[in-house]
Image 1: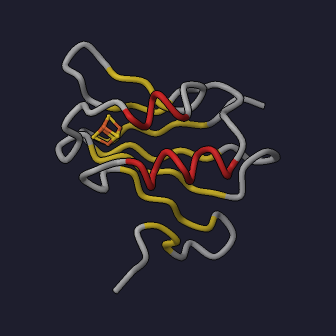
Image 2 (image 1 turned 45 degrees about the horizontal axis):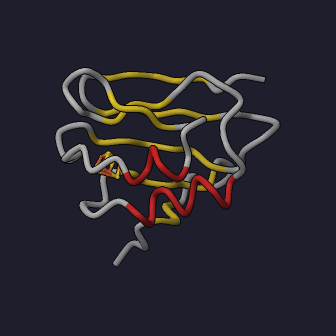
Length: 94
Ligand code: SF4
């Protein structure tokens, strides 16, 4: 099943029920186009013509790959939440 992506201005939210236990969010205003997320999880993240990250409506990478991509982002522009509880997993809330 493809991911369901909701773009709200520069704040994108997506889920992929049946495949991913995550809610994935990207903050385009924070993204600096470093592209490490794309290098790791190219089936989940891509860059637009302005070098801002967006989330693909595809089948996505596996969750551990998506998490590795989020962890690779130098500016924490990718947020991962638990789809069941809504609790933020990464970056770890302080
Ligand atoms: S790794 Fe972070 S800064 Fe780089 S493209 Fe992805 S979201 Fe943007």
